[in-house]
Length: 124
Image 1: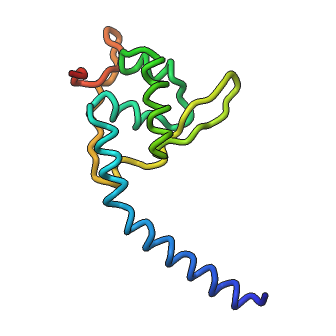
Image 2 (image 1 turned 120 degrees about the vertical axis):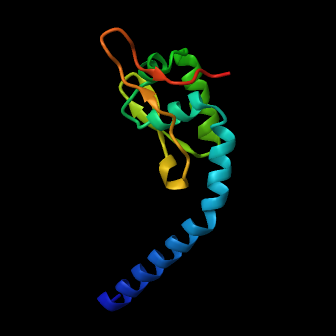
């Protein structure tokens, strides 16, 4: 194939990707809103960047690491997180940035000498 044809194919694929993303935004937001139905879950999802493990996230939000792993498994089935292989196991990375969908991330209290980091509002 010549270079002009490849450029045309690449431009067409970019256009398709743009419209596919646009078409799916509403559905993706609905899935995110349903799955992240508490501030704790929203914070956990936001912190799931592939660099932090379940223990680190659990300590941050004051829940068990098993709970974090359970959320990750549920979210993986919804395709809103993806597994990342790490030494010693697996952790998960969010697929979407919540800000892109207008989903507010709860304010997180900054740690001081006397406090450890935690969400402002506890899960009910």
